[in-house]
Length: 118
Length: 108
Image (cartoon, rainbow over all chains, first blue to last red; front, top):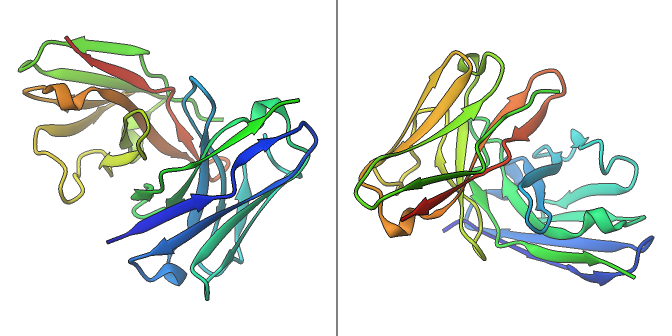
């Protein structure tokens, strides 16, 4: 069974940093690209960043470019998101998602909540 | 950048058919994917490549695509179908995925 479990969220002050993690199991992790997708309170889904299976190709949404860094450790079947210079608009639940698989995101974690507030 | 437009809400009585549209420029040229999102739960892929259902997804869910509107259809709607549904495509100009704003399906 495919499982994605996020952690690392919590309260943080504006300008602060957080590092999110996603532990994967139930599939050959090193063979899949991975993503972070977020959902602000009362809003829709917003893609944040993606990383190829090898980690060689990385993309970011314009809203986080230069502040967030995605990485992965295939040996530990883990995905990370280092978030710096956090602002209130970064508040939301952050989901780890596998893909693209046939250009979709076929499995998602339950998410971890990030709250940026003074 | 590519924009997907969804109505904020759709309401339907139990047993009826719900149609959730997703508008986009020449969207019929793209593969459209649909996700179901219930409060407190992870999003679930319910349709990929416009018309295909992942294993375990009800046959009551189907998809279509025509010119500037993709549509997800749920027949014989049940209370358990109540959720927010998001469409998604890839923006070929940026190489980034794009989500619609989501449509809340209410079962009356």
